[in-house]
Image (cartoon, rainbow, N blue to C red; front, side):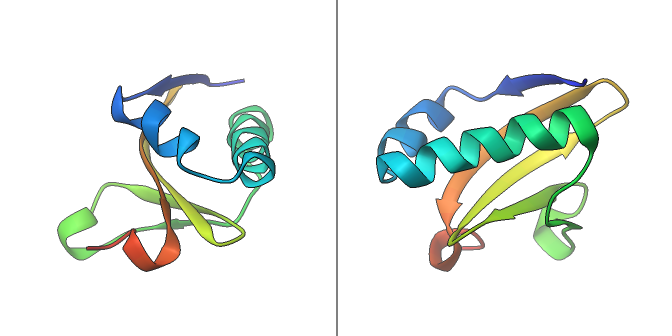
Length: 82
């Protein structure tokens, strides 16, 4: 399982999400870290080098190296790429 790190702003972003959705998002992040499965795509343009994990109506924006996943943002889809 890869180590999960989060930026300080992520805690506030998770609190802004409905509780059930937030639990689903956190579960999906842990599942991806453990198994590598999930709705993940590499981003391009201004977000090149980052990945997106889609969980319902939310996107987890993160970067990944061999042993670590660093979560940068957890945002609603409509706000994720602004």
